[in-house]
Amino acid sequence: MKKHLLLALFSGALGLLMINCNPKTDQRTMTESVQVQPKGTITVTTFGKLPDGTSIPQYTLTNNQGMTMKVIGYGGIITSLTAPDKNGKLEDVVLGYDSLEGYVAKSPYFGAIVGRYGNRIGKGKFTLDGKTYTLAQNNNGNSLHGGPAGFDKRVWTIEAYPVDNGTAIKLTYLSKDMEEGFPGNLQAEVIYHLTDKNELKISYKATTDKKTIVNLTQHTYFNLSGNTKTDILQHELMLNADKFVPVDKTLIPTGELKDVSGTPFDFKTPTAIGARIDKDDAQLKAGGGYDHCWVLNGPDDSLKLAGTLHDPATGRVMSVHTTEPGVQFYSGNFLDGSITGKFNTIYNKRYGLCLETEHFPDSPNQKNFPSVVLNPGEVYQTQTVYTFSVK
Ligand code: GLA
Image 1: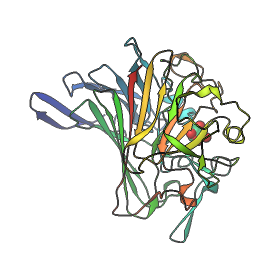
Image 2: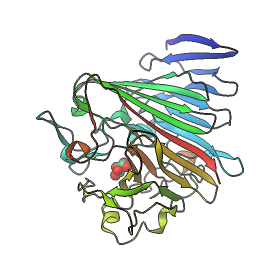
Image 3: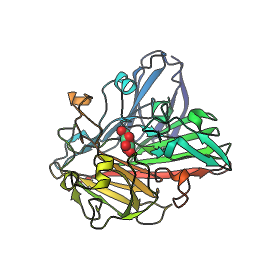
Image 4: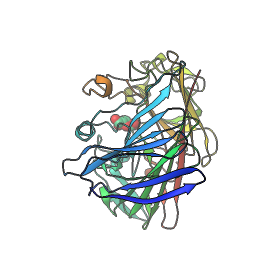
């Protein structure tokens, strides 16, 4: 392994050391701990090796409340995130595997960065300036989550990122022109910032050299019971949305934005996820539960409340703010007990839920949905903040 200590910055009494690990050349096991804030640290270890020998680092970020987040270079996956319960007990609130092999062999996007296009594109086709692009149909005749080798399966470069409050890392990945069928060299950057206020701020950025489409999101499965003790049906969810995006049988939007009032999709007031999930409802049937995009109230491009999630048993609360127009609430319907994850837990149906902030599914083919087009010279920039507290 060749480790590059890029630079050491000193700001007042605080030392901040940036480490750049090149996954291709990393051969040794890394263990490095650097003080980046009075109580915040970043530690780097080796998580595992890909079949081609590429070494995958795991970064552990700790804030001054003791909350930790672990992130690996493969897929930019958040492998662990701890949050305190009402008694201050820190436990893991995300699903995942103990080892890299699990993520590589079979993962329903646990913890991963999803791109270039989060969620589905109908028939895997879209048109830009009269040219039709064809993507792999990896989900019932549609393209899902950027294709069979999307951003969740790519190796991201990680480096420490200087912040005033808490700790942060920057992940970068260059997606080559026509990778998975998408035009343009897309330079993507994601910053994971764990603040001392128990917020996980995720900032996404991308630029292209050819007109393209982009819709990045994060596919962490949350379970606020702590170390995944039970399913998420008792979690209470509030979504700040008057409308949702109905879908057809293959989960492609019909184009309508439907009022949630009087439907099981009304989460304007906090409601247990399990309260209506098995109701006789055509949309719930299509998704096998909740697997839909909600149209968030409030301005499209500025940070607004998307929703809150509360586990009454532990008191944990997670609120989500985003600059995105929508949030895909996926209630873990495809988890079927075939995966045993961390803590030796069998992930049965609805053992985790995702709140994927994003533009609406199939936007490239829906002229009434907000645009996902990125032109050369423009900067794609979005932010989502997950805040942990108790009540
Ligand atoms: C998204 C989709 C779901 C499913 C999961 C991954 O949330 O909307 O239908 O594909 O990802 O299993």
